[in-house]
Image (cartoon, rainbow, N blue to C red):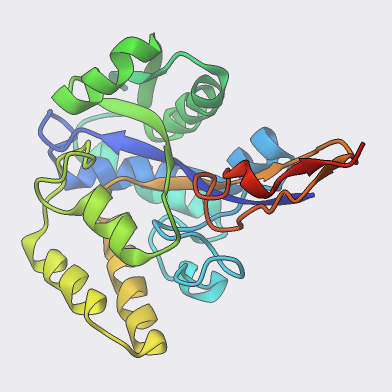
Length: 259
């Protein structure tokens, strides 16, 4: 059985460190990514494509496939996206003979390294030459907190499928888990607006508007949403798995062995 884990692979781009303080470079990075390829390679097509919120049908707030097609970098024509990225990089003085050399930092475990290798390959398509920088787990989170990176491949777990959790924790100005330091005060007003709404459909439309803006601004580009399989022995009874997080269903007081 496979189901969503509400974990996502996302890209940390240091908005304060040249050249990624230039939104044009961040946009080119987003246009280089082939999200379907990540899913095919890492999960044999099981991982899903989405924005900041967990994709439907399990995700209540994720952008629909039709709406995703309107988000820059998510269109099905990957080569068209990449050509736009190359045009941006050429306008900034880069090209096949003068690539932008960077280090792609990531936590030194397979779940982080493997997508980093794919990312480096994709960045080449827009004249960005990446070098893998694996970082020991004991150092990784401190490096993120200090913003001591140019680009980082990150895997993020979300506590529950709710916009308040994702938006305020990951993208609000001054949040400790906002590792990129992204801050858009005008957009954050919509964080508060959607949080106070009681009409689910109207709230969802605003969340989609926010999510689209975050992806197109390169706040923390989301590459894939994880799916996972869980197996257990037939004698294990009472396990109930959540479909909206990996964190909130491991209380075993109701689990027992039928032996």
